[in-house]
Image (cartoon, rainbow, N blue to C red; front, side):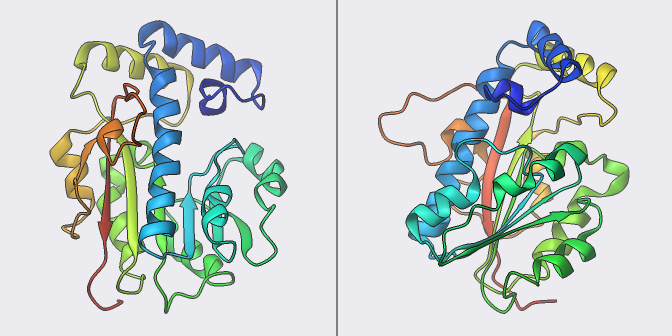
Length: 250
């Protein structure tokens, strides 16, 4: 569905049907998906360009689409190393398209569930050096983790394994801006898709970051996180933020 909203070609009839049903209730979902991809580009450019990050874990990567993490990061620093993580069989089939790394760097793909943080970290360690800073990207993925599964605990398990000076980037669905239409769109999605969506408020999303120091401007509406100059903001029912690790590794 996300690939469909992004204008990609890798989707099935069931995906298109569900995606169009959500659009019927909340047309802004298309602009939101594209705004989230634009946020990925901005945040990876910031991390690789301004922060000097050379290692990334992109969890919930989805199907290959223009502006993938390795394309953006390696355009700035060809030696960047990226590990993609997803547990969608269709993404696994297309994973080779994600592994077109620059010669100086590296790309890998893990078939793993977000809940299994130990497997993610162990698998990523084959490609990344966890004694050095790593950026973890959780973009449009934590809203698939219900409160009963403790999304804050998932975040803490991932960030607790990172070296000081690492980063966590998050974007997350919210109904704060338009409660009625967003709730209707989520209802349509959850009626058709097994993995339900859970919107969260600004304070709930901020709490998921576990008190880590926030990179300015903090947790803000998606389009307001360090917008590119001259680009009109795209509306999105999402908040986004980036945090930095400072303590010793667990």
